[in-house]
Length: 196
Image 1: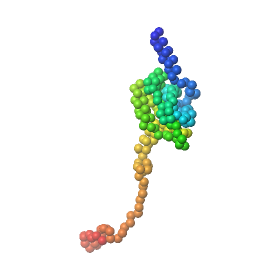
Image 2: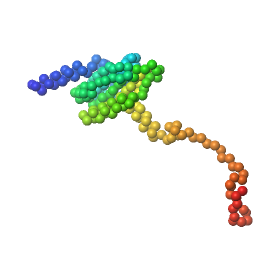
Image 3: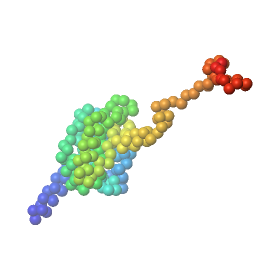
Image 4: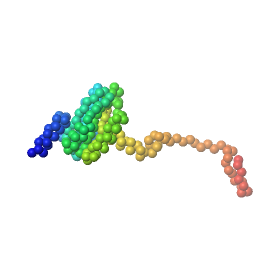
């Protein structure tokens, strides 16, 4: 009986915390950065930072979301709340989505040092419970990027040659031979060589 009451309390508490109103189409695969950015496209217009945690099952279906609002440059969220919701929702994957408010046309699509630290921290903490931080998506202006997209591009560029990356540029010049500049010539009647 006590176990049933505690399970009910956990489910009730989880429903209070997790925002299930955003769920639209259960066939959407939220493992795709494009799907996540499209789903949360309203973030591009906000004057302050917002952070969403999407809790996904093994097929990328969204089980629920958490939403946190912040200032123009930062958003704070309790680690324990994110971790407990990830565990209690039965999530196999977690995707973070946040915005960088900007007045730039192309947006501000560089992950900050703090963003990268949060990604590393949650990758480790969620991994302890067998949950994968699948990606972190950044929306700014009408553009988006993801941490995984940027990692894959870095790996692709690392495999390229210096010429393909543009680190080196292939240039050539014609060899000009000027008479009398150290060319060795053999005398026809001797085995001696002389420098012209």
